[in-house]
Length: 114
Image (cartoon, rainbow, N blue to C red; front, top):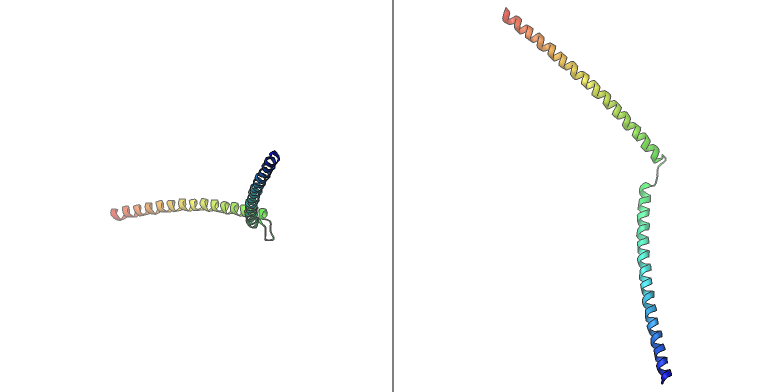
């Protein structure tokens, strides 16, 4: 009788161990499936990033940016010159206006004096 109880306990232990093993294997499979999905998502994101930064033309991106920066600096230099020239034109117009008004005042004075 003691042997039958021991045998039953062993069967119960093996059955319980098998159930735990199946549960662990199931959990491991689920973990691996999630990791595979995450890795696939990362792979897609990396490919998208690679497509965005990949140089698909004959010139180097850094050289293009350096050229663009120099072009922008040249535009700013020209704008600065234009600003100075416009300021000079405004000064000329102010002076012309003052002279014209002075002539007009003298003409008015001359006409009223006559």
